[in-house]
Picture: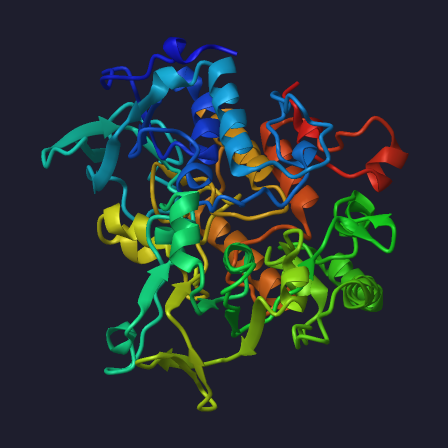
Length: 524
């Protein structure tokens, strides 16, 4: 691996640079590698790569998938046989090694925050995307405004194509809204979003929570990890319990083994995914999906039976009423950190169900009038990543970021049919977001390289509408653009566009029963 001294980063924008990439996280790095032929400029607002893994993690944050399921197709983990889930520090180290191996530093401008993007005429809303259907037209289409360091001066650069890789998480916290007199202003204690908690050192977090009555609002991965850290800080004499306010229950999983069977058997093989609806499928396949509905329900109930046996969900009132598959299909399944329910059994983590709540002087008040005393309230309420896009995109494009269903309408999870000469990478979720982003960047490189042409705007709109409808029929949480139940089909479509092999295994047995992962998509 190259030393730190050899990491020469970009200091200026070359006139030959035709492509801008905004963001230096996983998607930005994948885009830089795949689009290297266009001498891209990667604008990264912070002093380091890694995105959310560098700037929006707790000390205990780990990946939720095994190492072999979260690696680039052409760059393996050094210790990929290690069964433990990587820490956030290990992930950043892995990404730095990837940047070293492929000399991606030369494309990255650190401390370069994009604050404005202007359209230089464009093609408007036409039959073909960007007017001609061509992503590179030999003339600038966007002007990107960049603020560097602590300077208030904004420097503008012109590009033919822009790739947005700012991510869905971090930077913009989602804050609950309260009626007048019932918000944080009436609370005598401290209110902190999980984003601000991420900025504290380990000693600062322990000092903040030790011997304090803490309420954590939320029940997704960040809330669960935060509650566990709170409980660990309050072990011993004088410790106080952490109370989680749970509005919507989701299924949690202790490991990737269900009744002794590997989890991939249920959702990650071609045969397993044959059971589930795909976007824009034909009449015959729709009929087959309807006939296989009992089998899908049986798989979900089989997993639910294990989780109900393995975890004290009934004891704590945490068993969801919806099927497991709805959480898996919307990428909301969370892997439990070790010791979480052990802390609950010690009464260091408590749970309160609440669809509505507000602040009081001494804590929070639930909808039924119950008051939970608190010195500190954490809002693990998520992020408004799409607001980052809307903040920099000009009208009318900022109003098109989300469709009527609340989803980003992206063809192949990358191209917005109504926003010309721009791509969006990292806004589609799957079991392995790294693989999802890498393959989309390869597909995007094929588009910019002329290996295939996009369909008409109307055809792309119909396609993304079909994806939204398939999601709506699969899960009540359809607003999250998640492809986990049809990820192999999604990859097939991109491989077909590129003229690559669709079936990537060596024989039909492996094709049907072996799990697909990033190594199957190593470039030929």
